[in-house]
Length: 254
Length: 284
Image (cartoon, rainbow over all chains, first blue to last red; front, side, top):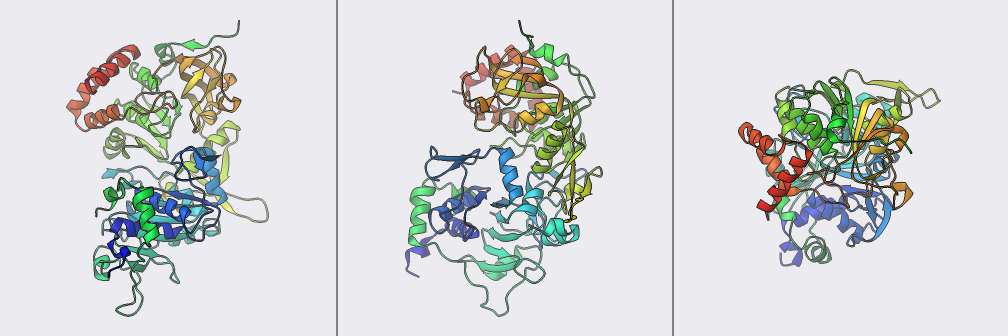
């Protein structure tokens, strides 16, 4: 491999895989949580999804994601939560735990009544997952994150939404899970998590080993493709424009 | 002469009683009414039910054993994701906890401000926010859609505490930063609201939309410069990250925490601010 793209770091491949989550989303808010999803959302906005809305990370919408002074709108938390309910938003959240149906936990580890490890609390995850498209970002793919059963359901997965009834499923949709190893989605008949691609340099066996349940795999030994490499222009944007200080490598080491 | 509602921090604290439900404004480690919280720590008020988009307000009150029950969608220090005292309190079983979703929280406040028992919302359904909180109920739409939604119960309080950039003596108050958070609603959902502010003014400057708290809801106004410290209060000041790091570090060890309390929390608000000045000089 001699193309420029072959020199992309893992973090850069992840940023593009995150950006791909917002492809085709049109004129909605891209709401990334985390450094690499933040680079991905702005990359999507600057390339293949030019109509996306983006905030400055707080209450201001920016018409130019590179210019903090280019305010095009006001989105304080109260309005932001109404936007969630209106559905014109695609969020990419973190997950301290996630299961095969996409139930996500950011609340605590252990028994909720008296947790071993208290985390943030469920924040907006219960409403996010019921109202607008949701993706997840896991910077360190491991069997401690990808578990058979999450300790607390903050973000609602496909099975729990179905059990809760039509009001829960009406606008529910989990799009993709991007990790430092792979891209997964839920495009199976019963919405079990499926391995979509592994990042260049990662084997399917490694993903399976570091996943606490068996993700659906396509048939055949070579059936899982590699995650696409950044284009030279995407690499330029990531390196020179969006993240010249390489903050991305704190989330995904080179 | 119009009614002058100004109070000192300690006069405010004397009006809060044990067992009350308090709504605390701000968001995470942003624009928290910390001078009012510190004033409460100088009283013997306890058994509080605290309703808050939580930050170090929750942490300090929990560390001092003042919280019986917390209603919150999160507790965070923003630049430090996890609040150390909240974690200790939860992991030690020291506080009762109702974990709400953020949108539920907004609509619970909206219900209270409108004197309604609940607001219907598409949130919580299917999540463990429902299973861990037995008081939550659903409601079925009476219209042809027949949807079953969560009935987010009204979040009313005995008192709301908010910190604003500017206020007048009657209790009108102004947020000059980009996000008023839920502070306006909090003031409407409370029997009485206490406002602390960076600066008392006779006339407000800036857009009228920034006047988010109105005097008919306000029982007391406390002038407290740097009163959100160590949380942010833009545009007056940013979060004091160095101090927040010291807070987090001290919270990790009981002995260090006692030393932190002695140094910063053993005197009145003026003493606190002087100790913060000294801390800044030492850390330059």
